[in-house]
Image (cartoon, rainbow, N blue to C red; front, side, top):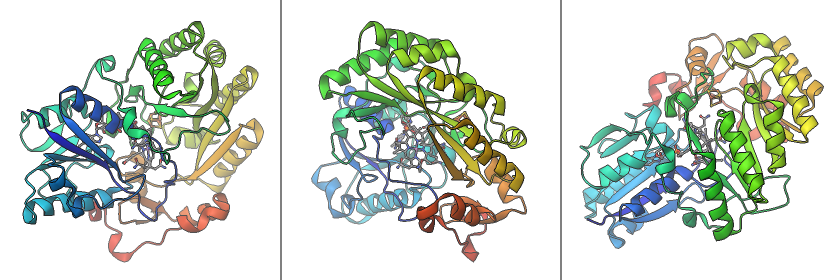
Amino acid sequence: MKKRILLLTSAEPGYGPLSTTEKRFPLGLGFLIAVLRKAGHEVFFVDNYLARSDEIATGYLQKNNIDYVGVYSNTLCFRDTVRIITEALDQRAHHGWRGQVMVGGPHASLFPHSFPEGTDFVVAGEGERTIVAIVNGTVPAGVVQGEKTEELDRLPMPAYDCFQDDRYWVRVPPCPDYPIYTMNTSRGCPFGCRFCSVKGVWGRTYRAFSAQRIVNDIAALQEQYGIKGVYFREDHFTFDKERVREFATLLTERRMDIKWFCESRISDIDAGMLRLMKQSGCQWIYFGCESGSPRVLKHMRKGITVEQIHNVMSLCRQEGIATYTSWVAGVPTETQAELQMTVDLIADIKPTQACVNVFIGLPGSEMYEELIASDEFYGLDEIGIAYSTKYNDLVKRFYGANADRFYFTPEPQLVSTEARS
Ligand code: B12
Ligand code: SF4
């Protein structure tokens, strides 16, 4: 039977250690909308991350006869996720709404038991198969482990028609051409960097859309929306090098005339692959380099060396591909001298851009636990992110004019790890 489903994102908090200005498409919900439509259901969509709304409290569910409310949840926006769920449960308890509430996304995968009592379904992990099963009434309420789609090519394209709002970011500086749409073509990361929570969200098995499928999707987006480029905003676009070579070759053979941008890993790169990438329109690559200190890189279990960073930067320079690099300052145990090695390495390799992020402990990562157990632990904020005693000084040093909004002062009642669940 046809059901009516409202999917929402959660609004950003007014403070926090991570920037929330970049408003790109929530592609996970885009996939869910596409599979629900394919299964014959009607889907409504509200992007609170783009602009906070009070739809639920003001009768939206009753007006639109909504059967299911589904919320995308990440840790930073957790407070607003709780607000949305609480409002929906209140509509059911007091205002005659008769539907059910489900939640998914990274925070649900990492902390499935943290949601308000009464939430009917908490989906950890992948959502496409499970959301259809929930809506079709074949899943018992509670915490559900999302069933994986092994062959990603079987999924429909995300519902890009829901993202036709001018406030979304469809530019990728410094490229003058737009619109540039984001795509997400792989899931899971086989690496185990200790500061990262992605393995907890997606697991360590890598699955990806085929090169042919990506090219077909780009062609469809060119035709429907006149896109000029694609930004592969995903953890590890280049992990399967054969897939990247095939993708680049197909783009070139089909003369797609598309500019593209991706996120990669220093350990993936070789000259032949870079050349094909450049020929097919790749403009820049984003690399998580993290540190100039061999010991810190090892401590983070990043699986790359300073020598590899040097090599990849010069290969990219030779091939004419710009390099956007990200670095972390202040991981637990890092000394002043080791941080200086990072600063010196950046000066030495001269990437196109270097962004130094001050370390924060992300719940669900190994270094979060390490920080909390160490002498360097300063406190937790109200969403459970952990800060070190070095944090504020490093924010002052590296964030310049923006530093003010990132400072952290612990509240006495929040220094317990239990505060968050
Ligand atoms: C692209 C991206 C962005 C984009 C788009 C975000 C978005 N909402 O999709 C932008 C630039 C906006 C962004 C911003 C931020 N991001 Co971001 N982002 C990513 C990235 C690289 C890919 C997201 C994606 O497309 N995944 C693929 C799709 C298919 O997965 P999905 O969105 O999770 O959805 C699936 C399931 O989660 C589930 N699901 C999701 N929602 C629901 C709802 C229901 C009801 C159900 C049943 C299922 C379900 O089903 C979906 C389909 O399988 C991920 C890393 C990753 N591997 O996921 C980080 C990631 C999600 N981001 C992260 C963070 C920290 C942020 C920021 C908080 C801070 C920042 N500046 O980076 C902001 C928060 C913004 C926000 N509201 O999302 C963290 C979240 C960690 C956490 N514990 O919450 C991740 C996991 C990266 C990391 N290193 O840890 N991000
Ligand atoms: S930082 Fe990147 S490579 Fe390391 S575990 Fe996270 S997603 Fe994988």
